[in-house]
Length: 142
Image 1: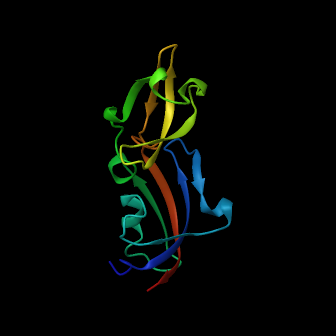
Image 2 (image 1 turned 120 degrees about the horizontal axis):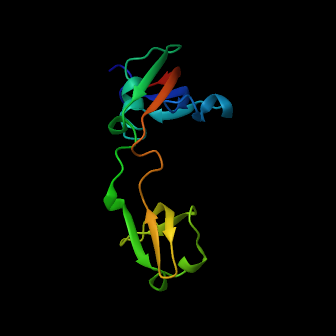
């Protein structure tokens, strides 16, 4: 498409199928800037802008595979509280970062905790969800 590899600015509003707004650049008053086709955006959003003209507005519906993917049961794991420093102070619903084997941080949510164990979910919070976007192309730069 004509906008591939170009820096684009878009305004957008993201909604769930029930109409609830989960994110809006309009509310922030700042368009979102990204380089088209470089993996900075979820696939369906990135694809939607590839042939848009400045000023165009499109409405798209994305399945989970075009957005944040399906939920992966392998991304849910339980560890002994005694084996993890700081785990005793966490509670269900907490959002924290853990480190992988190479020391890189990744976000998780505490989904369960008892006297001995704590369970984390590393799935993206939008995984498994259908998403709708109204996208307005504000500018394109080569």
